[in-house]
Image (cartoon, rainbow, N blue to C red):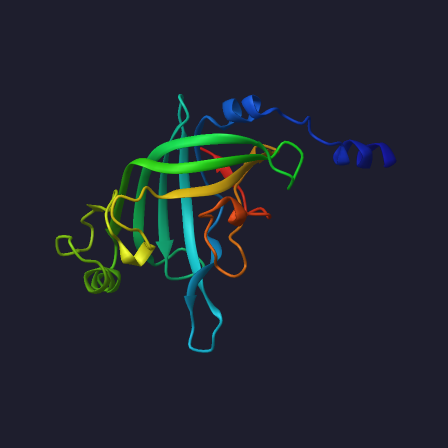
Length: 201
């Protein structure tokens, strides 16, 4: 029995930055609907939950593509909106959260589109975003380098996140959102915990 436990607890071999980059190539998806604290608050001051599923694809030449679907419920039954992002990654070296974890910056410097999937979300976009065509369910619009108040983006700004990647037992972990809802918009706000993992598809 002791030998079995020792085998089970044996650490995986720590990978270098280049090895993690190569092992990351391909497509991944969330194993379940993820929950994050948003930067919006309820009337009582608590942070509103933010439900989503992610499908990233890592390509050669430090390119990536990412589909994020937001949901109104924790079980992923009521989709609200979908984001399509294309851009580049920058690998910045080891992250202290776990042996082999890597600091990775994601820049949406090629494409960023948003598609409302319910009328209520389209109504919100029509109210709070200016300079776009009328937002309609199922019709994507590019917000690339445009002022987009719902996401806090200004004219000419390229969306960028200071995140992390950790591979373990065939799964990929990114950073968990800061508990106060702050985004990963600066080096200081880079995550210090792991989000639930994604599996290879």
